[in-house]
Length: 124
Image 1: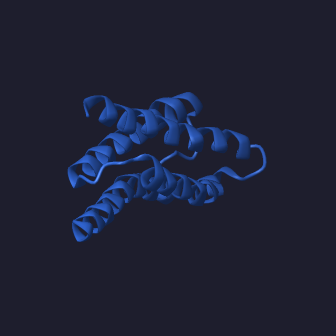
Image 2 (image 1 turned 90 degrees about the horizontal axis):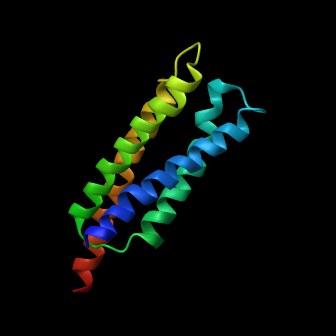
């Protein structure tokens, strides 16, 4: 179980962050930076929900809370070091889209965990 939570929290957390990071780098060429986060967000939400529903196998609500905390910490720390520090955006990085991204990164695993737990309890 310890290996599984590490893989799910840090492995998937990093890969989800990396997906958004790479997509941002690719779209930066053609999309104004002010709307970049709003364009990436639907793809990130879809991928996150897919990972949570297909790749994360736990029915424990606490497991999803742990994922939520780990994924949010990864997003905040990696954004700071690999976006804010590296690119030092002239107009700043932290805007509504970024705060919404952090909130969704925290809320989506908890929501899916709540749903899976309730479905599991109904089937018992």
